Image 1: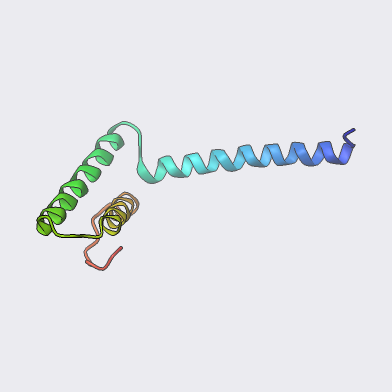
Image 2: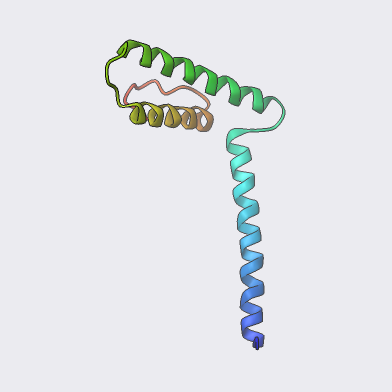
Length: 94
């Protein structure tokens, strides 16, 4: 049996979750600009970074490499470009 307090807390939690989720969605779309020409920008950023990663992989020519670290770096670079609007100038970033 739900008390009035329990019902009130659940209702508040539901409203909070909905508001938080809306804010997160808006923030995500604003950061990556995935609407209209934003989709093209996203695809160009990803494609450019994929080409850079392929060049990096080609340099190893069959030798062992830490693919996980390379993929992680590429993902960080993509996120950096989308957030900052440009490729990092410092090779140590990210």
